[in-house]
Every structure is written in C-alpha cells, then in structure tokens.
Image (cartoon, rainbow, N blue to C red; front, side, top):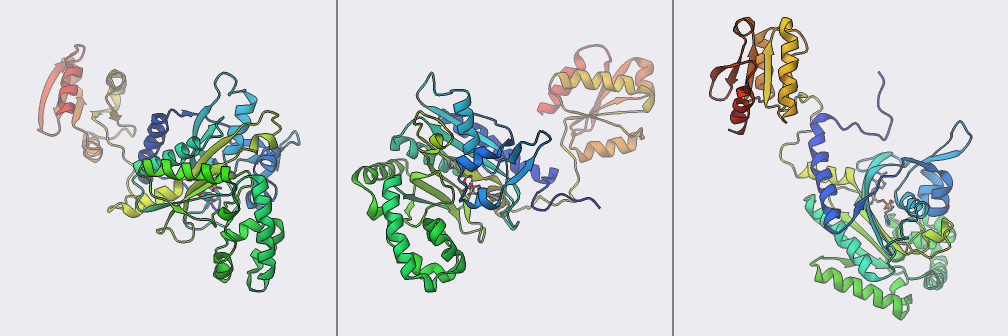
Length: 428
Ligand code: HAM
C-alpha cells in the first residue's frame, strides 16, 4: 500500500477542526499589532539559506531538502521563513516608503530530522518579522505578539525564556572565554559537545546531554560580557514585558541554533511534550541582510512557532480526542434535498439557488432511494429537507420539511417563499 512519506503527516478531516481554530487566531492576532501577511514560495535557491541561516548550523549542514532542478539550479525546500522574508523585503525594496515593515506568515517548512513526537520532516510555522527598527521596543513587541498568539490558541502552561547574546564583538570575547573553559573541562563533556567546542562553542550551552549538565551550569555567563548599551537594551525589553504582564525567565544558557542572531534571543517552552519542548522561538538578526548582500544595514527581529506542537498540546487538553481516523467524514449542512434520479436537474437548480444565498445544501450523488437520503439528513444534522418527488413535480410544488419539528409545507416551485421558509427554519 502506498503511504505518506516518513516524517510527514496527513491532517484528516477529523483533525482539521483543531487547525482551523488555530488558523483563525493566526489570521486575527498579528493584525491587531499592525502586521500584514506575506506568502513566499516553498522552494528557494539553496544559496539563500546557506548565506542567511549559516553553513555551520544543523539546519543548513544536515537537515535541508536540496535538489537540482531540470535547469541544474540548486533548490531547497524552505527549512524556515526568516531568510525568505528577508529576501522578499530586499527584492521588492519594501522598506523604501516607510522605515519599518511588520510582516507575519504561516506555512510549511521542511527539515530532514529523525521524526518523533513533535518533530516532523514537514511541519508548519506561524511567525512574524519586524524589520527596520534597531530599538528594543521592537524586540518586546515581537515577544508580546508571540505570547499573545500562544494565549489566544489557549496553549496551556508555557514558559518564556529570554537571553541576550550581545553584539558580534561581545560574543567574540565571550566565545574565547567559553572555549577556554570548555577545553579545561573537555574530559567530562559528551562527544557531541566536544565536536561543537571548536565549530560553535556557544551551542554546547544548548546541550541536552545529562553528561554535559554540570559543565554547562557552571559555564561563564554571557550576560557578564555585555557592554552597557547591550545591557540597557536587554533591561528595557524586560521592563516592557513586565509592563505587558508577561512572565519570563532569564536564561543565560539560551543561544538558539541559527547563526543570524544578535542581542535578544527567546524561546517558548512546555513541559508537556517530552524532549521536543520548544514551542517556538526567535530573536534579533541585525546582520542577516548584510549576509544576503544588502549594503544598507537593516535590523530585524522575529519569531517562529511550531504549529504541530501547538496542536499536540490542544489535543492533550481536549477531553474528547476527536482525531479518530475512523470517524465518519460528514460535514454538517443546513439542508438536504431528497429526490429521485429523474428529477436531478430540479435538485441542482434548487441547490444552486439556496447555496447562492449562503445556505449549505447536500444532494444525493448515488441515485439512492428516499430512505437512504433521509438517513443522510440525520447524519449531517440538517434542519430542513426539501422533497422533490413525483407528486411535487405533478403539482409544480416543493415540500419543505422542518426536520426538528417534523412539520412540512408545500410551496410553489417558482416563488420566493422557499428561500424565506428555509432561512426561517435554519435560524430556529
Ligand atoms: P526554529 O527555532 O528553528 O526558529 O524553529 C521555530 C519552531 O519551529 C521550533 O521552536 C519548533 O516549535 C518548530 N520546529 C522546528 N523544527 C521542527 C520540526 N522538525 N518539527 C516540528 N516543529 C519544528 C526558526 O525557524 C526561526 N526562523 C525563527 C525566527 C523568526 N527567528 C527570527 N525570526
């Protein structure tokens, strides 16, 4: 039997309601902060992510879906959306008429990772990017927006970790101190962390290996290496989060896995999903545009939240787990038209009229008898059945049956009473 590809997930009709509920939040919340939606292609040139996300990162180094197309261009299925959004901003010169640009997005991302609960090869992100402001107010705004989306999605018990990794210069000094410290303690470190020590020592602070815990906990604190300006901007962000009634923890070991960050980094976490505990994260990326070839410095800050993880939590919360793949695939409708195959044209005429007025209508597509069609009416919770049978056609009428009160009336097939009565019954 053909099956979906490992690490991808079919969202069956029984599960779609969770997605639609969240998608409503995604559409309405960023707009309340003045963010506009942007949709970029799923495929981009490989170079965009190599330059934007960084060759040394796990995402670019190990996880990208890369292929050569028929023109022999190297194409990548996007592993994230920050680099594509930055590319679009540059390509369309979106900052030309106004100094800041606030954008949100929702879409699929692809990473070749080992699938497990909360980790897939195709997953979805809702995210936002605020471009053009180097001020900490924009960092706070982005964190508040992400926090509001999580709250509006009714995500239970999440925590927010924030940190500042300073400027490139500050990080260079810290990197040196940290590398020395790690070298001194390399005997006790895991193999993974020993490898990272030279390529990306800051990432050892992210290690989840129990073996690394003690060394990581006593590592030099990056916040001690920030200059006054960086410390002040980090303090203002904290004040603005407090003013917005947002709880957070300062976590000096939070560095995140993508190369483009500077200053603020943050992550939303949960205890309810095991090892895939990051619901989303983000940070400031003032050097990303330069790495994409822009000569104008363009500061930016943003976040991405993993939608599958939000859905897993929503399902955990829901008392009736309705994501049974064997659940029947019926969508509720207002009205069914019960008829026989010889009157199918009239059925389609009446259905068209009602649907054009916003009434949902189910018609039989299997040439079955009245009994089966009335059974369908029950399954789809219809309030009205319109009957077009032999006697109706002879009299040039339609029978409208109120399925709740079990009453019926006949109306002239041509006059407007049909619509009024159906609407009246549906509204209850
Ligand atoms: P990221 O931390 O790589 O950041 O991904 C954000 C979120 O996407 C993660 O916290 C997680 O919830 C979800 N996620 C990542 N990989 C997977 C996966 N394999 N399966 C399921 N969910 C996953 C970024 O992507 C940045 N672009 C965020 C950002 C925006 N930074 C600044 N602006």
